[in-house]
View: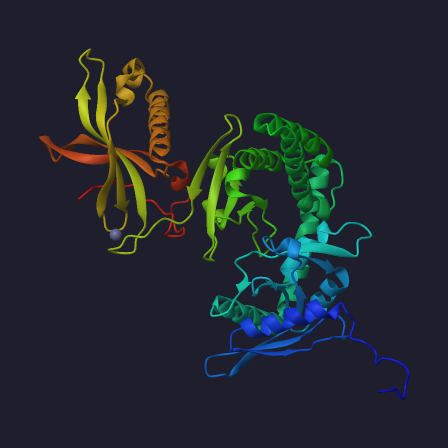
Length: 483
Ligand SMILES: [Zn+2]
């Protein structure tokens, strides 16, 4: 057939094919309570359309602005996307909440990321001078797949928060002004002390920059020599330099050292990443393979345990790093719950079977139980038993000075109990909340003795702020009795 007009119609741009496939898959896997109004072959900048979320009765709850992209085949394991800064600017000004959605067209799943003010604040310092885009990664738990609707609840929460912000806009604006002026006062005081100016930006972001530089130094070296100790040393040397150049505070420098040690020793096991996740309180590290978050703690004496507790259901752990011995202890912030009462179950190391040494220098314990104890209702269960000779403080000759120097003795005996607690942690590979043993106590009349179980040592992290803190970590310092 001869053509009247000797030309082809304009083709669809080729680049649209993968994007259109991504949109089709997204529309196929999304839950029926999400109504989509998404344009294919889209020419409108910044946005691909709108999602409207409804409840089960199909009543609309709110709308979200979306941009949908095909997830690059290279990034299927760790979903990320090179975001145009213009898009981020659009999100900042958008009246609707904004979601970036990356569709994995190989596995028919998608990942979502809410681009809100908190995220933007977090990203802003990472944008390099003159850059037009920035790589943004999405936590794999933000998954969208057929027959799963976990994300719906989170999206509704995002919509509600967004509405709240619009309603409270005036109030928040005032609050912001107030914060700004308090900051100026603080900064001025600092200048008086240090005699130099530090910008707001530096004070907040220097630690982040320092940890990125040091962890990179570790990885670069480790990839070459596969020598953990040597690479750790290189990273610690880098930290020393960073500390000089970036003027970190003592705390920031210690935390940096803790981060490096933890990363060097655990990055293989947990596939650690710096937590680029957003939210109000990002953790120091995120481990995608275990889906856990880690906060680094270097000095339990001054820690405020509440800083480590969050309201969401993510699994946060405290990584207590002794920067001198380079030992690491992983501390949970949420404990298993008691099947009887819902209270929290702690692992107690119980020293049993006191044994009078033949050479008559004090007591040893010959049997030890790992006990799971509910601190609310007192239910307990022996989980494991081992037999070692474990010497309590009175075994040691230093015990003799207990009357002359009670404070010195107290310190000495805590050291011994701490050592026993550490032993138990390594033996059972579990967080030990307390070490206890049976003891005779005088009761009412002088000759009346009863046997009670006294905690000899309680993990220092559990003794902090024991008033009013989240029940999941609270540990009473009163005697613990077993059934
Ligand atoms: Zn209980």
